[in-house]
Image 1: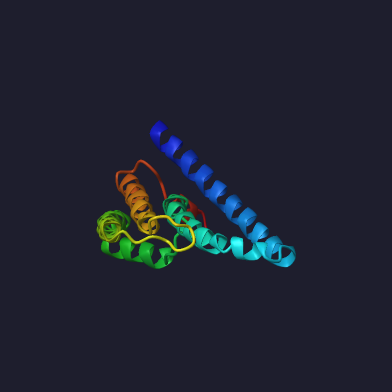
Image 2: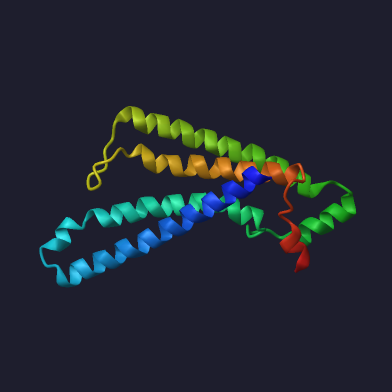
Length: 164
């Protein structure tokens, strides 16, 4: 569980840092366009950089959101089905979540390898485009980890929903 605490802290730090950098870059972009004159054309890279950072922001946050019970779900319906059928619906959802997340991570990895092999370069950032495809791969691996931890009872992602 100490490793999970370290992972949570690293995710939070990365998410907050990415968000603050995005805000600072947009602020610089607005100021540059308003007062910079010819400097505005030198800041064209900011929009692409912020777009890339927003991808990482979203995909790094999905695992934390699942762990906190913040994903969309109809839990009253789910709990009624579980009560009537006596099926372990929550565990079934977690198992399917692990499988589906790992499948999407695998697809993301395959896409990353394909784009990397093409050698495509970003026009304004002058960096390989494959970095963009690493975001969903990492995000879905983190999501699968959270589903797996919930499946084995190591985290309780349903506690926030049960309080409502």
